[in-house]
Length: 338
Ligand code: 0WD
Ligand code: CA
Image (cartoon, rainbow, N blue to C red; front, side):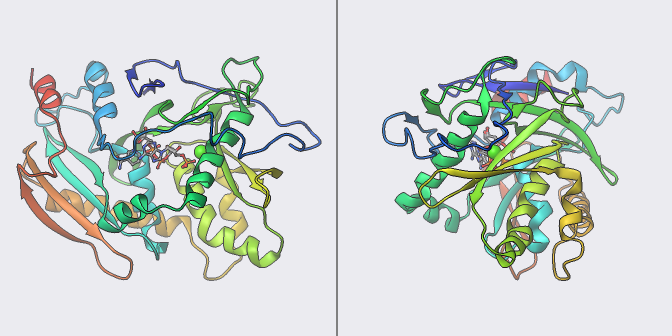
């Protein structure tokens, strides 16, 4: 449906100025020179992750593009049952196989569309505030890998001497269906491949990941069982067709690269009994969205149903009127009521 960019100061622009271009790695592999620790101390500008942004940037895109989202249906302002971030849908999709982290999802029905916005759980907040130096550096290394693999122009080359600024983002806006549900969501895209065999977005988009180098079949099986499910869910949702993994050695260098085709990931796991299945994820997600439709029926931008889930427990919810959980801003409600 569209795209938008967040600049170095985290300001919204309704264009593709932050798009980056995939640069295929040299045929002999990335060594030497992919040092993922380089710049951590002196060339790193970090987004302030204590600021809750909610759905605001996506809502801003909707306000600016509401004409192309209108419906004939009187009770419904936008032609979507759900509006949310892709990352929130990823969490719902992978819930059947998640054993560590729970979630809190706030839901509001406004003019016929259900909005879903995540709130940080207490456990996640504690973890964020106590994150070890090692984890912070690992996060940086993921962003540094992007810098090694991307250029600012279609014919450019990467500039690893630059600053890594995590305020910057390019986001795509997608409309799709899951069963009987129509979804409007946005997700951050790492880069586009200007030489992609399928040049249309989103199939030309590439997701970049880093992961610890694996040495044994057991390590690889664990990676398929626990990690690649998240990579699959995240890229499958918007239709990003390739995921390029950079494998980290103990010294923070990249020791290998591997490309996964999103739609072929299920083949890597289907012979492993006890592994995850895409259909289980999609059925759970569709059933959860159907459940939201039956529970959240009062159309009211100040009313929030807060759905909570923790591993080993069923989903539960509480109802909050005009509380700290309200997430549809007045400017949005007013813009869509005009
Ligand atoms: O307020 C919140 N609780 C969240 C807001 C949680 C998750 C995302 N966001 C917002 C941010 O505004 C961000 O611009 O969503 C946007 C990204 O949305 P998404 O694509 O739906 O999120 P997700 O799929 O979880 O993450 C995609 C990328 C990550 O890449 P990796 O390779 O690590 O999955 O977005 C980045 C990160 O680079 N990212 C975030 N950026 C800003 N705020 C956040 C975050 N909270 N989480 C991940
Ligand atoms: Ca990434």
